[in-house]
Amino acid sequence: MKILLRCPLILVVVAIVATSSRFYGAEDDLSSIKSEVTKRHDEAVKRLQDWIAQVSIAAENRGYPEGAEYMAKLARDAGFQQATVINTDGKPGVFATLDAGAPKTVGLYFMYDVKQFDPAEWSSPPTEARIVDKPPLGKVVIGRGAVNQKGPEAAFLAALHAIRGAGKKMPVNLVMVAEGEEEIGSPHIPQLVRRPEVLAALKKCDGVFMPSATQDLDGIVTVNLGSKGVIELELVSSGEKWGRGPAKDIHSSLKAIVDSPPWHLVKALNRLVSEDGNEIAIYKYPKPRPLTAEEKAMIEKVSKVRSEAQAKKLYSVQHWIDDLPWEQTNERLESEPTINIEGLVGGYTGPGGKTILPHRAVAKIDMRLVPDMKAADALAALKAYLAMHGFGDIEVNMTGGYDPTSTSADSSLIKAQVATYKNFGIDALLWPRNAGSYPGYVFTGEPLKLAAGHFGLGHGSGAHAPDEYYIVESRNPKIQGFDGAVMSFVEYLYQLAK
Image (cartoon, rainbow, N blue to C red; front, side, top):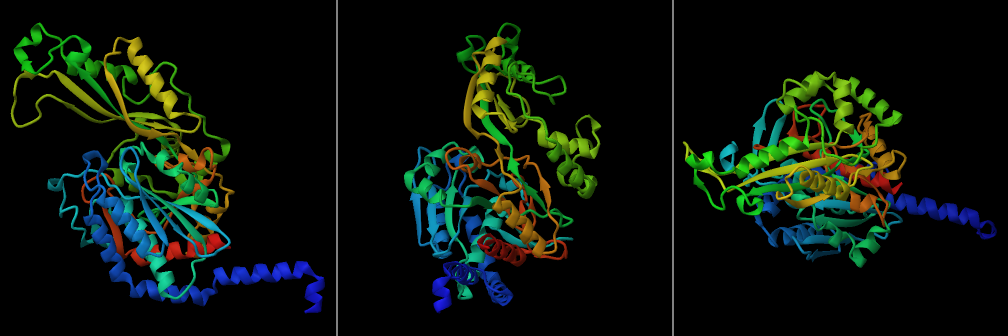
């Protein structure tokens, strides 16, 4: 004892070791948690099924505020000491904290909303979350939100239940931000994240991650170092606003003497892109940052491992743009901004014909952004370009959107992901960014400037489409089922605590 008193450095080392052993258990500790995961499998899957049945769809104003209240209850049940529903000018969010007295704190981004659906297009009702056999994958849960994002999020919550059920202390503290508007472009997430109490809690975090199902059908895992930004908007052409064409639907024979708002919209859409629709033609549109040598090297490596044939099968396509080779296709996926028509609506679309000249037509548009592009700049350029070419009357209604995100491969958040996957025998591949979007900019940008990403084993598909699924019992030894996904979150939390 006298020696220790004379050597404060030793005291510090002993304290660090004691703290570390307290929060990062030995292998037998994780084994006891794994046993708890197996024991709780049925209740965890049932929790996911019940959550899928609680539908929240922002675009349809469906399931609010019940969805937020349900999310808060799920958090409290999983061990968060406080989970508060926070109102915004749109749909409510949830702010929750779990204080384990741990040295490190990690942020979580959840979404509790889902995309719209047409039950007629599904093989089983999308809110029933049936467990069905899906050869050759195994048993899957089919339902809206199964993989995007309730399945992975439910697996994460199951990890918390298992750790507590095994009598273990959580290895890290947690700060959760959950929103109910992700599927409409997260228009109000700044109101949630920038509340003083939420911002103060997030500032204590080493980084923020979103639970995901990252495994391809062949078991390959990529670690995304960012995501594209997005703008979601409507372009509306109407006779009233245009001053030409009818102010109400009229007989189509009058097209001989009356202008057409739908054709006006089509001509405006044509102006935005090249003849083949694949290049943005907007004057003074923000310039994307070219791929770096490091990013090109990542893409080259991944392109040699991931199957092009499997990707085409997954997306139901026969050709890539310009019939590009696989590596160049992936480079384009990572580097190109896009303007996509999600849908065109105007006039009569029912059985047979109705011979009308519609007074109004709407195009649903999404615009993906890559690093060095700002959502505000892209929107301004679009409006100016339409006005320049005589389409200033067309309404541009932005419903949501945000900037792209980037996170360093050297961040502790990403290194812990790579290490955890390694523990499962997987050499994860680094990938410049997800071609999809999520509002990670609120974490990676000012004032937080945190690392942010996605993590989780398991597999699912069909996001935004009919028969969306998430594997619960895998017959493929390369793909984890629900319990394996749960354990990946357990190990990740302990890895983050190191």
